[in-house]
Amino acid sequence: MRETLLEDEATFRLPRGLLGAGVGLTFPFSDEEPLTARNASQACLTCRPDLYLLGRHTAVPTLLDERVATADLGLDVAHVADPWIEGWAATDLAASEASLAIDGNVGARGHGRDVMGDPFEAVAWLARRLAHRGSGLSAGDPVAVGSCTGLAQVLPGQALLARFGDVGSLRLC
Amino acid sequence: MLAVSPTATLDAMGESLARARLTGALVEVDLPALADRAQAEDLRDAALRSLG
Image (cartoon, rainbow over all chains, first blue to last red; front, side):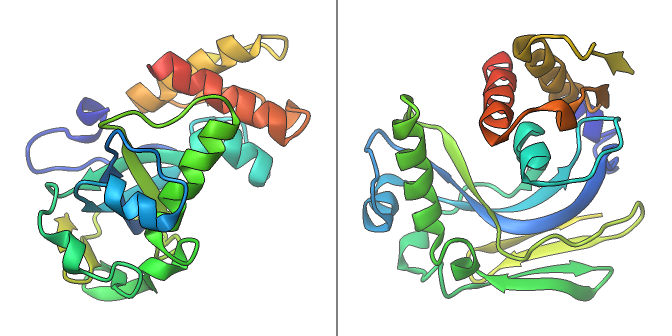
Protein backbone atom coordinates (compact mmCIF):
# COMPACT_ATOMS: atom_id res chain seq x y z
CA MET A 1 0.00 0.00 0.00
CA ARG A 2 2.76 2.42 0.88
CA GLU A 3 4.22 2.14 -2.60
CA THR A 4 0.87 2.92 -4.18
CA LEU A 5 0.44 6.06 -2.10
CA LEU A 6 3.88 7.55 -2.00
CA GLU A 7 5.43 8.35 -5.34
CA ASP A 8 8.52 9.69 -3.63
CA GLU A 9 9.47 10.87 -0.17
CA ALA A 10 7.52 14.12 -0.46
CA THR A 11 4.47 13.46 -2.64
CA PHE A 12 1.32 11.75 -1.46
CA ARG A 13 -0.95 10.43 -4.19
CA LEU A 14 -4.60 10.23 -3.22
CA PRO A 15 -5.94 6.73 -3.86
CA ARG A 16 -8.70 6.16 -6.39
CA GLY A 17 -12.12 5.69 -4.87
CA LEU A 18 -11.36 8.16 -2.09
CA LEU A 19 -14.43 9.60 -0.35
CA GLY A 20 -12.78 11.75 2.29
CA ALA A 21 -10.64 11.96 5.41
CA GLY A 22 -11.14 12.01 9.16
CA VAL A 23 -9.10 12.15 12.37
CA GLY A 24 -9.06 9.46 15.05
CA LEU A 25 -6.87 7.36 17.30
CA THR A 26 -5.22 3.98 16.96
CA PHE A 27 -4.15 1.80 19.88
CA PRO A 28 -1.85 -1.22 19.86
CA PHE A 29 -3.53 -3.99 21.81
CA SER A 30 -1.83 -5.99 24.57
CA ASP A 31 -2.64 -9.59 25.48
CA GLU A 32 -5.41 -8.64 27.91
CA GLU A 33 -9.04 -9.10 26.95
CA PRO A 34 -11.04 -5.89 27.37
CA LEU A 35 -14.77 -6.16 27.97
CA THR A 36 -15.27 -2.65 29.26
CA ALA A 37 -13.85 0.74 28.38
CA ARG A 38 -11.93 0.71 31.68
CA ASN A 39 -10.31 -2.63 30.88
CA ALA A 40 -9.58 -1.43 27.36
CA SER A 41 -7.68 1.60 28.63
CA GLN A 42 -5.45 -0.75 30.61
CA ALA A 43 -4.99 -3.13 27.69
CA CYS A 44 -3.79 -0.45 25.29
CA LEU A 45 -0.12 0.30 25.85
CA THR A 46 0.14 3.50 23.85
CA CYS A 47 -1.70 5.37 21.12
CA ARG A 48 -1.26 7.64 18.15
CA PRO A 49 -3.41 10.12 16.24
CA ASP A 50 -4.32 8.93 12.77
CA LEU A 51 -5.50 10.61 9.61
CA TYR A 52 -7.99 8.16 8.14
CA LEU A 53 -8.51 8.02 4.40
CA LEU A 54 -11.85 6.43 3.59
CA GLY A 55 -13.10 5.29 0.23
CA ARG A 56 -14.26 2.47 -1.97
CA HIS A 57 -12.30 -0.46 -3.35
CA THR A 58 -14.82 -1.24 -6.06
CA ALA A 59 -15.36 0.31 -9.47
CA VAL A 60 -19.02 -0.69 -9.64
CA PRO A 61 -21.15 2.42 -9.02
CA THR A 62 -23.59 1.67 -6.25
CA LEU A 63 -25.54 3.40 -3.53
CA LEU A 64 -23.45 3.51 -0.38
CA ASP A 65 -25.30 1.93 2.51
CA GLU A 66 -24.33 0.02 5.67
CA ARG A 67 -24.22 -3.33 3.87
CA VAL A 68 -21.98 -2.06 1.06
CA ALA A 69 -19.70 -0.15 3.46
CA THR A 70 -19.32 -3.20 5.70
CA ALA A 71 -18.39 -5.49 2.82
CA ASP A 72 -16.02 -2.93 1.32
CA LEU A 73 -13.60 -3.32 4.24
CA GLY A 74 -15.44 -0.64 6.17
CA LEU A 75 -14.27 1.83 3.49
CA ASP A 76 -10.84 1.74 5.13
CA VAL A 77 -8.32 2.79 2.48
CA ALA A 78 -5.24 4.03 4.31
CA HIS A 79 -3.98 5.54 7.54
CA VAL A 80 -1.42 8.31 7.82
CA ALA A 81 0.05 8.12 11.28
CA ASP A 82 2.54 9.74 13.59
CA PRO A 83 4.79 7.59 15.79
CA TRP A 84 3.25 6.03 18.89
CA ILE A 85 2.83 8.52 21.73
CA GLU A 86 4.17 7.78 25.21
CA GLY A 87 2.70 9.31 28.36
CA TRP A 88 -0.77 9.57 26.85
CA ALA A 89 -2.51 7.96 29.85
CA ALA A 90 -2.78 11.28 31.70
CA THR A 91 -4.83 12.72 28.83
CA ASP A 92 -8.63 12.60 28.87
CA LEU A 93 -9.00 11.27 25.35
CA ALA A 94 -12.80 11.41 25.41
CA ALA A 95 -12.73 15.13 26.17
CA SER A 96 -9.89 15.94 23.77
CA GLU A 97 -10.76 17.83 20.61
CA ALA A 98 -9.92 16.43 17.19
CA SER A 99 -9.81 18.59 14.11
CA LEU A 100 -8.94 18.41 10.46
CA ALA A 101 -7.76 21.59 8.75
CA ILE A 102 -7.76 21.74 4.96
CA ASP A 103 -5.52 24.41 3.45
CA GLY A 104 -5.43 26.13 6.83
CA ASN A 105 -9.18 26.14 7.46
CA VAL A 106 -10.71 23.73 9.97
CA GLY A 107 -13.15 21.72 7.91
CA ALA A 108 -14.10 19.08 10.47
CA ARG A 109 -14.10 19.04 14.24
CA GLY A 110 -15.10 16.66 17.00
CA HIS A 111 -14.07 15.05 20.26
CA GLY A 112 -12.88 11.63 21.36
CA ARG A 113 -16.30 11.06 22.93
CA ASP A 114 -17.88 11.26 19.48
CA VAL A 115 -16.78 7.64 18.97
CA MET A 116 -19.22 5.59 21.06
CA GLY A 117 -18.90 8.01 23.99
CA ASP A 118 -15.27 7.08 24.65
CA PRO A 119 -12.53 5.81 22.30
CA PHE A 120 -11.87 2.94 24.70
CA GLU A 121 -15.52 1.89 24.48
CA ALA A 122 -14.88 1.34 20.78
CA VAL A 123 -11.92 -0.91 21.60
CA ALA A 124 -14.00 -2.84 24.14
CA TRP A 125 -16.89 -3.15 21.68
CA LEU A 126 -14.59 -4.60 19.05
CA ALA A 127 -13.16 -7.13 21.49
CA ARG A 128 -16.67 -8.21 22.54
CA ARG A 129 -17.83 -8.38 18.94
CA LEU A 130 -14.89 -10.51 17.86
CA ALA A 131 -15.33 -12.79 20.88
CA HIS A 132 -18.97 -13.25 19.93
CA ARG A 133 -17.84 -14.30 16.44
CA GLY A 134 -15.36 -16.79 17.86
CA SER A 135 -12.18 -14.82 17.35
CA GLY A 136 -10.47 -12.00 19.22
CA LEU A 137 -7.71 -9.46 19.38
CA SER A 138 -4.11 -10.57 19.64
CA ALA A 139 -1.16 -8.86 21.26
CA GLY A 140 0.15 -6.16 18.99
CA ASP A 141 -3.01 -5.78 16.93
CA PRO A 142 -3.58 -2.10 16.12
CA VAL A 143 -7.16 -1.00 16.80
CA ALA A 144 -8.40 2.07 14.94
CA VAL A 145 -11.43 3.48 16.75
CA GLY A 146 -12.86 5.44 13.84
CA SER A 147 -13.09 9.08 12.92
CA CYS A 148 -13.93 11.60 15.65
CA THR A 149 -14.40 14.35 13.08
CA GLY A 150 -16.71 12.65 10.64
CA LEU A 151 -15.69 12.63 7.01
CA ALA A 152 -14.43 15.69 5.13
CA GLN A 153 -13.98 15.76 1.38
CA VAL A 154 -10.35 16.21 0.34
CA LEU A 155 -8.98 16.99 -3.10
CA PRO A 156 -5.58 16.61 -4.77
CA GLY A 157 -3.23 19.47 -3.95
CA GLN A 158 -4.76 20.29 -0.58
CA ALA A 159 -2.68 20.44 2.59
CA LEU A 160 -4.17 18.58 5.54
CA LEU A 161 -3.40 19.12 9.23
CA ALA A 162 -4.87 16.63 11.68
CA ARG A 163 -4.81 17.41 15.41
CA PHE A 164 -5.93 15.39 18.40
CA GLY A 165 -5.81 17.48 21.60
CA ASP A 166 -2.45 17.30 23.31
CA VAL A 167 -1.77 13.84 21.90
CA GLY A 168 -0.29 15.11 18.69
CA SER A 169 -0.74 16.38 15.18
CA LEU A 170 0.33 15.36 11.72
CA ARG A 171 0.54 17.14 8.40
CA LEU A 172 -0.04 15.81 4.91
CA CYS A 173 0.78 17.97 1.92
CA MET B 1 -9.05 -3.30 -13.68
CA LEU B 2 -9.85 -6.64 -12.08
CA ALA B 3 -13.16 -8.37 -12.61
CA VAL B 4 -15.03 -10.96 -10.56
CA SER B 5 -18.10 -12.71 -11.96
CA PRO B 6 -21.37 -12.44 -10.04
CA THR B 7 -21.19 -16.15 -9.31
CA ALA B 8 -17.77 -15.98 -7.73
CA THR B 9 -17.52 -17.31 -4.22
CA LEU B 10 -17.19 -14.99 -1.27
CA ASP B 11 -13.59 -16.11 -0.93
CA ALA B 12 -12.78 -15.10 -4.49
CA MET B 13 -14.52 -11.78 -4.00
CA GLY B 14 -12.66 -11.31 -0.74
CA GLU B 15 -9.34 -12.01 -2.43
CA SER B 16 -10.19 -9.41 -5.04
CA LEU B 17 -11.05 -6.80 -2.41
CA ALA B 18 -7.84 -7.62 -0.56
CA ARG B 19 -5.84 -7.10 -3.74
CA ALA B 20 -7.53 -3.73 -4.17
CA ARG B 21 -6.61 -2.82 -0.58
CA LEU B 22 -2.98 -3.68 -1.19
CA THR B 23 -2.50 -2.16 -4.65
CA GLY B 24 -4.91 0.76 -4.74
CA ALA B 25 -6.60 -0.68 -7.86
CA LEU B 26 -10.39 -0.66 -8.05
CA VAL B 27 -12.11 -4.02 -8.62
CA GLU B 28 -15.46 -4.98 -10.09
CA VAL B 29 -17.19 -6.75 -7.22
CA ASP B 30 -20.97 -6.71 -7.10
CA LEU B 31 -21.52 -5.60 -3.51
CA PRO B 32 -25.23 -4.73 -3.94
CA ALA B 33 -25.83 -8.40 -4.79
CA LEU B 34 -25.05 -9.35 -1.21
CA ALA B 35 -28.18 -10.60 0.49
CA ASP B 36 -27.85 -8.94 3.87
CA ARG B 37 -25.48 -7.52 6.47
CA ALA B 38 -24.39 -10.99 7.61
CA GLN B 39 -23.23 -11.82 4.10
CA ALA B 40 -21.51 -8.44 3.91
CA GLU B 41 -19.62 -9.27 7.12
CA ASP B 42 -18.68 -12.68 5.68
CA LEU B 43 -17.24 -11.00 2.59
CA ARG B 44 -15.33 -8.46 4.67
CA ASP B 45 -13.93 -11.27 6.82
CA ALA B 46 -12.91 -13.20 3.70
CA ALA B 47 -11.02 -10.13 2.49
CA LEU B 48 -9.33 -9.71 5.87
CA ARG B 49 -8.30 -13.40 5.88
CA SER B 50 -6.80 -12.92 2.47
CA LEU B 51 -4.86 -9.92 3.74
CA GLY B 52 -3.50 -12.12 6.52
